[in-house]
Image 1 (tube, one colour):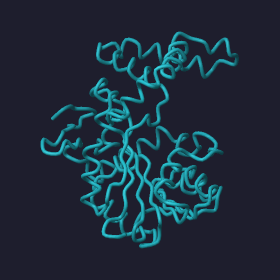
Image 2 (spheres, helix red, strand yellow; image 1 turned 90 degrees about the vertical axis):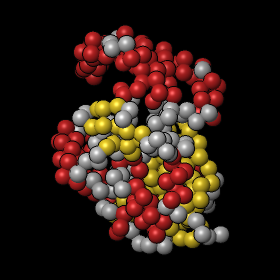
Image 3 (cartoon, helix red, strand yellow; image 1 turned 30 degrees about the vertical axis):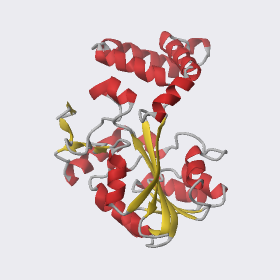
Image 4 (cartoon, one colour; image 1 turned 45 degrees about the vertical axis):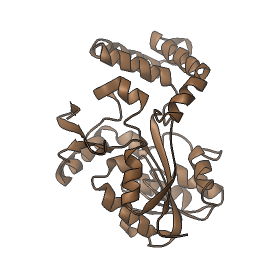
Amino acid sequence: MISKKYGFDIVRCLDCGLVSVSPLPTKEQLAAYYKWEYDHFRHSFSTPQAEPPKRKLPELRILERYCPPGKLLDVGSSHGHFIDNAHKYGWDVEGVEPHDEARIQSQSRSQHTVHELLSEAPDNSFDALTMWHVIEHISAPTDFLTEATRKLVPGGILALATPNVDSLVAKATGESWSWLSPPDHLYLYSPKTLPLLLHQTGFEVLHIETRRGRSRNFLLLMLQAVVYRLGLFQKVKGSVQKAAHKFRASQSNVGKISIFFIVEKLTEALSLLLYPAILITWKLGLGEEVLAIARKSGTP
């Protein structure tokens, strides 16, 4: 066992290095957790976080290096921002989204087909299948990816991204790493363990990399790691919450300035200055997110 969090043991396989929750939650526990999450974060589920992007998304650019626009299935399509963006650039798109409100909102806005379950999508039909931050939530990833292979045409391309458990931020933060969040995340992968899973489930890995992921502020993440490591989190937590409340409630730009706002902006600027050094960490497999491109095996 490498850690214990929220009442769950976090273990690492001594043979392959895969990190997982042990034992895995039951279906009843997962259902109760996701009901709690929905009840507490109802607004974020029912309202998109931002307007759909107007420019081609980086994930789509990477996918198109290996697969020209064709028929695409996005698994975990949420409010539909990725499939909307892909459609804009010539893809024939469908989605899979189990959450009712997100799925209905996506369908009503764009009229794209969005299935509730992966099993509902037609077999042998898609040139590309994408999963952006999905596989870490899946309790039976081998079965899930095996089913994904059936959705792809011969030679079809899989593109997926997931948190990198061997990232520099994960190593620095330890058990307080934000992506270490059972029972939401059940398996956590690295540039070494993700290819193993893909090979086991009928894919040939074409490309794997680590990158920034969803955070733009590397230094702020490292500063948070220091705060956690020194045991200062509980001392500053209340102040941070008060500052965040003041920031949201203020009607003027002056009122939104606080020490935490200043720290965030300074570390953001320094992160940009240190970009060449940060890029080296990504090349060494230490980026916050691991991205893989794979082809359905046994096909030209």
